[in-house]
Length: 388
Image 1 (cartoon, rainbow, N blue to C red):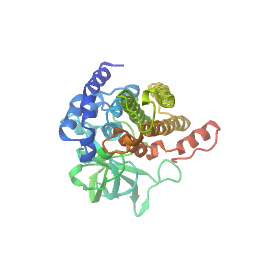
Image 2 (tube, rainbow, N blue to C red):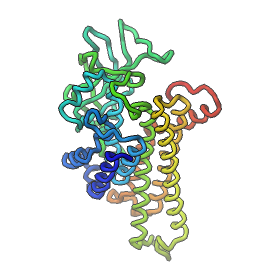
Image 3 (cartoon, rainbow, N blue to C red):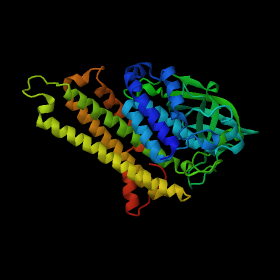
Image 4 (cartoon, rainbow, N blue to C red):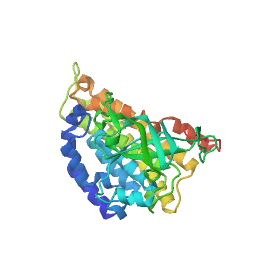
């Protein structure tokens, strides 16, 4: 682990008690409080995936996963927002070098939100493109400086063919957040603090240099960190899931050691063999999931350090690991919530927040159970296909 990673992890460790103490506020505001955002920026959380050549930390994937787990153990929404910013920082080096340099010229803490899902239309016009569309789930859009809007490329009234046979070319445009309309849509069950609202862009003209190919674009900077972004995204989410699950184990342990006694029971929680078994099972499960994630992170890092991105079967196996971890973390949190009894029902209980957060996380396509099917197909040498 490099000096940058060590300093960042120490800073997150120092910030974690403050983050935990403000979880209810983050939840009710449905976004990061401004002063807490500034603390996270100062700690370097939003620079961990930015190249060192552009004043970032550029920490490797294994250390990134540790950082995201630590943040998830403090608050799921905070971890998710930092994770999303990291993922867009991994994508932006696909801009032309001159534009990428200009983006980071004034300050290294560039925060972007948006979507690489091609829900919009990127229409070829003189001098660049015209962008139209509406994108949901733009986590952190209200505190970001830039938005990423993606769509299939239209040229001369037809979809432009992409590098994958049968699938049109997709492209992403980067635009200042004030050029879009943000709709307050994030009234949901979990990860409330992420502010994952919709945004819309209509007839916006962007220059060619303000666009990039999110999947197949050439990199403007060197370094293993900027390969295999989709694989990293899956593993990132798994790390956040482990953090949320560990937080649930921490909270149910604290509840039990506070000598909670359920109604009409003879023994306290810590004296009950069934509770002891369930707690031991939950904690062991989290450790096993963490070990699985570390194994895949090490394998991924060895691949990208060799100078290539994971191939399709390798990606499917790692995405399958991430899907299994998310599913497993959800089971751990559910067990902790159940163990909390009627107390866990109240909005003041962190256990019900963990339950809502983890089951929101598992809805994301990057950790969908379909990746386990893809992993099985890869093991059998069967056709994998593109996407789920």
